[in-house]
Image 1 (cartoon, rainbow, N blue to C red):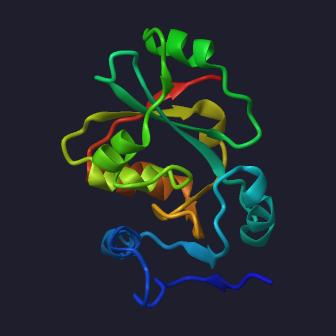
Image 2 (cartoon, rainbow, N blue to C red):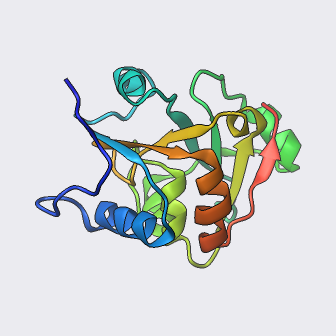
Amino acid sequence: MYEIYTTAPADEGRLNTEMRVYELLEKLGIPYQRVDHEVASTMEACEAIDKVLDVTMCKNLFLCNRQKTSFYLLLMPGEKKFLTKDFSKQLGVSRLSFAEAEHMEKYLGITPGSVSILGLMNDTEHEVHLSIDKDLLADEYIGCHPCINTSSLKIKTSDILEKFLKYTGHEPTIVEL
């Protein structure tokens, strides 16, 4: 059984990146609910966690153009199917594909399976373009990882948009997938 926490974990054995997420959420006055769990790197693995937190984890996709010069973080409802051509068309970008792990680490400070909007706190040069599916904005809460896939957070969507993104300086492009 999972336990729900509303505070940061003890720093024992936690990654610095994860602990920095909790520090920033505290600094910005963003409350959250947290559940620790085994590695959850797929949407299927998140289903039990979703039930505990009473939230649907959003699908976070880190993409790049063919030349690997433009990078995109797409947030969409977990149950939606991702079609590259639909997303590419809305952005006016051709040939998007999944970005490599080295780019995730470089721009978001995360590893595959841990992609999260919270990784934008590490993108101080604004190299990553944020896109959010319109349907996700209708949800009161967003479920995401704190830059590591062994914990999950439930955060108010309005806090992400109005406090977190304001702090990071990332302006989302709203898309319909």
